[in-house]
Structures are given as structure tokens and as C-alpha cells.
Amino acid sequence: MRKDIHPDFKECKVTCACGNTFEIRTNKEEMTIDICNECHPFFTGSERSVDAAGRIDKFKKKYNL
Image (cartoon, rainbow, N blue to C red; front, side):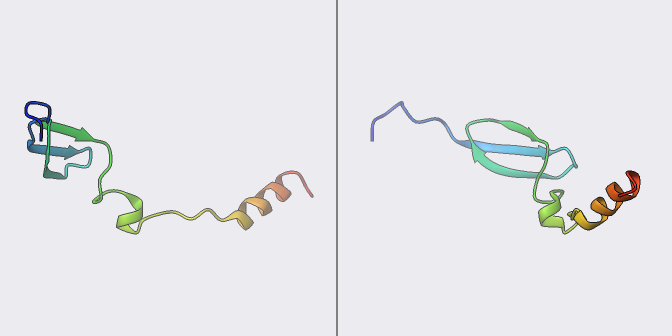
């Protein structure tokens, strides 16, 4: 390998907007992220599903169809 071309990897403290913190190795000292696996709807199971039939009925009711 060639010398002096690779970045220095150091421990990085990652802080999420929800308050969760964890450590990874990267070339930065600190990172702030908006969403992580602790607060993402896919991982937490709190995802919302859109009810298409309900929306269609609402539209028909609104325009008397």
C-alpha cells in the first residue's frame, strides 16, 4: 500500500435527533444525524399505511359522486 494517502480512522460519536448515541469508526470526530434505527418507522414498527379506499370514499362524498 502507498503511504500517506489513506485517511486516519478514529472513533466517532454519532448523535441522532431522537437522543440515541452510538460509536462508529470514520475520519470525523463527531456526527449528528436526523434518523437512526431506534426512531425510524420501519425498524420501530410504527409505520403508517395509507388507506386508499378511505380516500376514494372521502373524495366521492365531497363531490357527491
